[in-house]
Every structure is written in C-alpha cells, then in structure tokens.
Image (tube, rainbow, N blue to C red; front, top):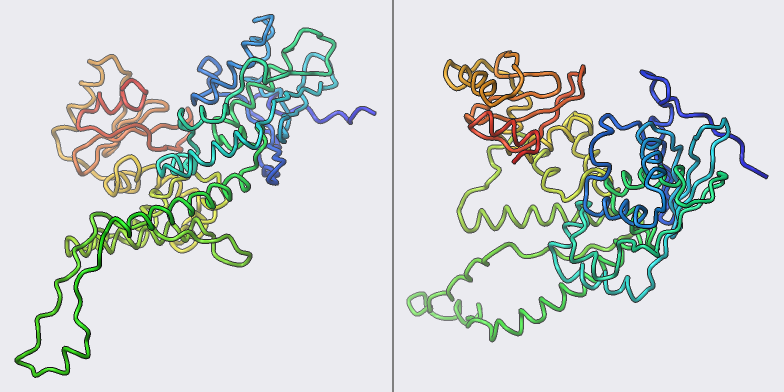
Amino acid sequence: MSPARPRRPAAHVPGRARSGEQAQARHTDTRRTFPPLPPRARPATAFALTWWGNAWVDALEDTALDPARLARGRAYADRGHVDAITVTPGRVVAYVHGSRPRPYRAELVLRTLPDEAWDRFVQSAAARPDHMASLLDKDVPHALAATCGLLPAVDDLTPDCTCPDRVQPCKHAAALCHQTARLIDEDPFVLFLLRGRGEQELLAALTRRHAAHTAQEQSEGAEAAGPELDSVPARDVFARAADRRPPPPPEFPPPARPERPPSYPQAQGAPDPLSLDLLATEAAARAHALLTTGADPIAGFTPWQDAVRLAAAHPGAGLTAATRTLYASLARGTGRTPGDLARAVAAWRQGGADGLGVLEEEWDPPAGPFDRARPALLAAGHPEFRPRRNHLSAVSLQLRLGRDGRWYGYESDPGREDWWPRGEPSPDPVVALDSLLGRV
C-alpha cells in the first residue's frame, strides 16, 4: 500500500514560511530525520560548499547518463521540492514533488564500509590531535577520508525512484542527492552514518582509541625522562640543626606547554565528557600561563567576554550534543540566549575581544579614516555605502570601524537587519570588503 501523500511544501508560495522549518530534526544514532530544507537564496552559486559535499555530488554526476535530468533535479532542490530526509546506514530516503499531485519516493543506496575500514579510520584519527579537533569542528581532513575510502566512488552510489522514468538518476533522485549534499556540508557525520557508523558510536570509538594513545605516550615520556631528580627526606632536614640544614632541592622547571587532561568516561548522570575536557584544558592553559608569565591572560575579561571566549575555543559549530549543551549553559549563566552567544562567537573568532566590541558597541569615530573609506570603496568599484556612526552599509553588506582602527565585515539577508560577522578584519576597508566577498 502506497504511503499517504505528504503536504506540498509551502516554499512554492513566495513569502510564506515552510511549516517544517520550525520542526526539530529527529535523531537516533542510526537513524536521522531532517525537516525539509528551505529553497536556496542564491541558486546560481555552487551547491556544495565543502570538498566532501562536492565529492558527494560528483559521485552521482559520474553515474548520470543524462545531464539534463541532473539540471532539472538541481532546480527541484533549489526550489525546495524535497520533503523531510531520513538517513540510515547505507540509505537516504525522501519524498520529492514533481509535476504530478502525488510525490515520488526517491532513495539513494550507498555501500557501507567494512569493520576493517572503520578500524583504520579510528586508528588514524586518534593518533593525531589535529584530526580529532577537525572532526569535532565538523571538518574532514583529506588524508583522514582517504584512509578508509569514505567518499563514494562511481559504483558505491545507487539511485532509485518510484517515478516512471527508467533512466537513473532521474530528476527526483538528483534533487534528493543535491539536498543531501547540503546536509553533509553542515555535518559530515551524516556521511559517516550513510557509510555505516552513527555519530555517538564513532565518537565513543575515537575516545577509547585516543585514551589508549595518550596512555602510551605518557608511558613512553616517563621512560624517556630518565631518573628522578635528587630529593631530601623531610625528616632528615628537620632533624638537623638550623645552621646545618642543606638547601632545598631545585624547583622543577615549568613544562614547555600545558599537559593534556585525562580522558573522561561517558556515564549516566555524569557531566558531559567533552565539556569536562574543555574546562580541564582551559584550566591547564591558564595555570601554565600564570606559572610562566606571572599573569592571568583573561584576568580583565567580563563574565560575558569569558563565556564567549570559552564557546569560541570549543571545536564545534553548535551541531553536536556537547556543543549545544555548552552553548545553553554559557548563555543561561550570562543571561543571554544561545542565538546571542552564537553571534558573539562569530565576532570573537573574527577579531577576539576587539571583534566582540565591534559587534556590541556603536560609536562616533573622528574624522579621518572613516571619511576616506567611502571614496576608497567607490574607487575600487564597490557600490555606494551609507554611513551611520561607525557603520557603512549597502543592501546586504556592512563594514564597521573598530576602536582598534580595523574594518570588520558583516553580512545580512537583503531587507533584514540581521548582521553577522564575516571575513577577516583589516585596516583597509577595501581589503576587509574583499575578504567579506571571498576575494582574498
């Protein structure tokens, strides 16, 4: 019996909000369901933003017999014709609205990886802290993906659809493939699930293997350190006369860098292990700075600045459970919302405490660099910017002059005052705007 016809997404009516956008994605470790993605604001741009997202699209295009079907499928995805997407090991499924009233059921079948391939992946990732940090930050290093053949090859991906078109991929399967590329762009753990491993299972395996590597390195480090320094028993010192007491042993030299914190286990009712790791690493870094320099590097920060700094240092983008918990806790403790914190984190990553100040403070700059910025932008071929205090705005682009003398780029959807930090700051407004536009 065929499933009941889902409601057509409201995205086909201009200006109407899609009801599924407010729904939360339903996830288990081996089954993830995502609400319908909204239409793309800029259909002419590249569909995938990351190299692994492009590799996913390339795998389908390499199997295509008709480029025209791929183009129509991409247009379907651009306009939001794909309903909720369900991802399980080896399979991604969704209903796609075509020319008929009843939607078609499209699916993509992907070969899962064997246990030996996952063992190589976990071993390679756990052996390198930079690879571990990249995975937690939703990034996939090229070298790590190559260890297990993570990206699909031509014979790995099989499209299917209930439409009468017998040429595969049809436009409905192509639309599903392009929307799946958007999910993989934001969270590569979707690709890991398609290849056979859920996020929690994979993170647990990485944590165990990383703990084993850490223990082995500590053991090897202790052996390489050689014999312990000479010491004097306390009872011998105090048993002698005051004038005959030997000098105390020399102080231990400070370590070259903060040591790694221990690995915290996952236990029911216990604090999140990744949050504990973050706090322990942070405490070790501050203690090391205080020991070696005599100054606390964050002593002058307000509680809000410190909360933003902590969130910005966490290698995540708000998609993992650990990062969501951290953002919610820090926002609650400072009387802000997680959305406020996310915007502040973007400003901190753009320019540190100065970048956060640019986000939260408007001021009246003196004559000079601010007045020379507009003619410089016009001379470089950019549109005319409207000045307001330390802001220069033009449709969806904005430059803000900070008190440090640098220009900071901001971007918003046209017609909205929802500005987010983008690009690298620069003393030159033209360079800052080029960075915002991705030209440098």
